[in-house]
Length: 204
Image (cartoon, rainbow, N blue to C red; front, side, top):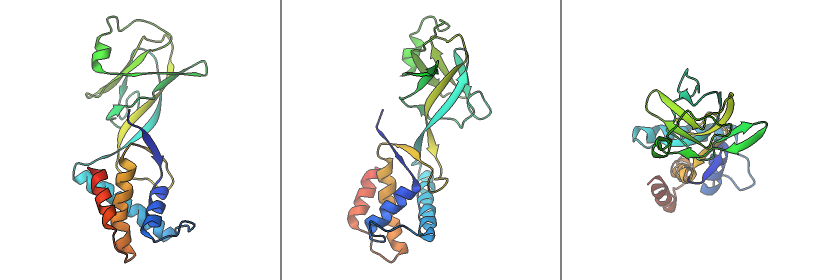
């Protein structure tokens, strides 16, 4: 799995305002600066979506179910919006202890001959995103089990300044330098050409 970074809108906006010379390193941004910054950040995400460029976030989803499979989607057993995929880092909890749960490909899961085989310690999980989406674990625990799934989903907006989002590698730089392209104009400051280049490279 690519490395991931956890970031808030406040950190992105403050860093950009520091980098652009709006704020000194020890300054705290005002409420107006924060609100303008998050509006700009969310407009960037909305614009990218119109260009079929999507921002993804990794969410830790806790799901408890029994048996070999569970449905995934709004109103289903795992009640979340339709995920793009599962990332590595999934695990399950048994007797208060956490155990890693590798994410399997379709080919790896299909290679299992007896998919109903019972076992207290699942060795892998497979996510089939075809609607209706499902997850499959093997071997199959005999009791209801708590799973922690690292779910990759589209991020449509930063909900507020301080919610932390875990972004796959590269997305932080793309958002940061894209802010550097836009925020200086609101303060009648020039845009650094190197930031424009960095933003283009990061988005690419």
